Image (cartoon, rainbow, N blue to C red; front, side, top):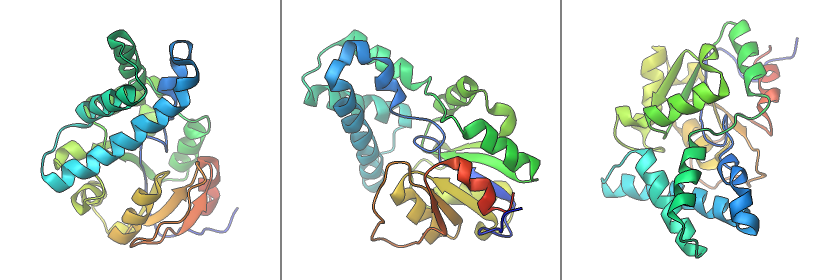
Length: 228
């Protein structure tokens, strides 16, 4: 058995997009229509999607993640001179059917077998998350799916992370939080979680409050950190 790096936790809580589900899969599914614009569209879409969550939170102008995702797509398509309503609809439909990363089901199974609770904590709306979980076939491996819609503000607001604490009914330090987003990992650490940064995209360390307890590149490396 591996020596545990993360200790004394009762639950593993996961970010959704980029951590469990591949947000690049939506544009990849439409590569026949996008051609060489698939990669830049995916990058612009994701960047603007995140920027809009932060800006709306600062402005006090919340809208659910589905609306934000559509508005971000509109900006990204306009920036690449893509004026195609049918393609827009197709891309959004694909976003509801994002693929889970290959190691996700086995990782969740190992955590559950080890006696840990599992949950998602995401910016996604309940409807978006339900569709993604169903499509990936991982519903039986999750104890809860928590959406920011319960508090009406996006990450990195502390009230979002508090949702996981309230669900578990313990201390923040009893939660091991996983995110592929560096800013989310650091913010979760600053909140009080034990954090594993799933650095799938080779990001550099942030210069902001918080410090992840561990860094991995795939969720397959998570169970050994927990001694499983």
